[in-house]
Length: 398
Image (tube, rainbow, N blue to C red; front, side, top):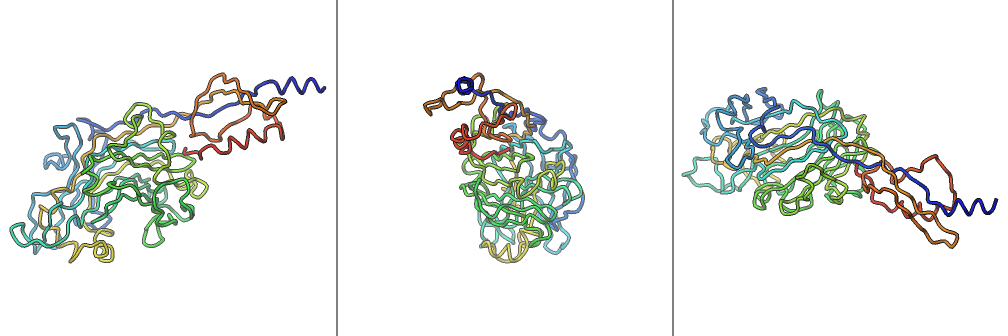
């Protein structure tokens, strides 16, 4: 009996590792970027001073087109002079929704050169020939986000959004009651702003994480050539990364992105605090640009950020919106593929050292659990040291 135990201990235990790869599902880029979208002409639900245009009109007015570099341009009208006496004037803009849904188990990659902001020169409420004293970048509210139908029942995931003079992107979720962000920021590199994702809390503030890296929004973003945002929408949680242009990982633009190599996400919402399958259904991708409205134009927000006067004062002068456009290199959606690979685990020898004989190894930190034993064998204290070592693996991302 004793010799049998020693024989067993001399063997290595085969284990199963769950490895996640990603397959391209939908790609929006180049001359076909605007295929597969619906353009809304409905009144703005955020009470902004915009008039959303159909795809045909947006195309004819050069509000949605592909430039000579092959990048998609989505912009606000910056040529029409508004009548100062017209209280109903709304500047022409775009609100576009993807026809294809994004489901849990998806990786969304957004590569942009420019994100909308207000003018980079002192902008004016009066014609440009007159005196201009107001600060730059006020009134513009761009957004790139995911949203389920019958909002808020199927949730919303904000990926690129902020207003006025903000220099950092912020990420947030908006849901029914019961979804939260953990009270600590472990597992993410961004700055935690608010933890309750319930849409009825603090006027639909959402659970917000602010990007801590520089140049993620406003003129700073375009000054460094833009960058990439990645959102992993997984049943185990929702994660978003930001990479300035010079720091975009090589696999971000490849056919095989691997988030497990990207380090801590900027924002991480684990399912332990917000059950993704409970609070989120299939999502549509939405891109829009608003002016003023229920966030950018609220006096407490507008004035606290350094903007003076009234937000609507900027509306009538088209040159205030010369830089209010998206320039997008590509937008891609990948789907998760989880497969099982085998690896031979190290078994402590009689002397207490460990040996391993790997058969095939497929490494990934995106695992449902770091290791799963075949056959459910219970080795007790024999495995205690090895299990302690595997417990120090990075937390799962998907």
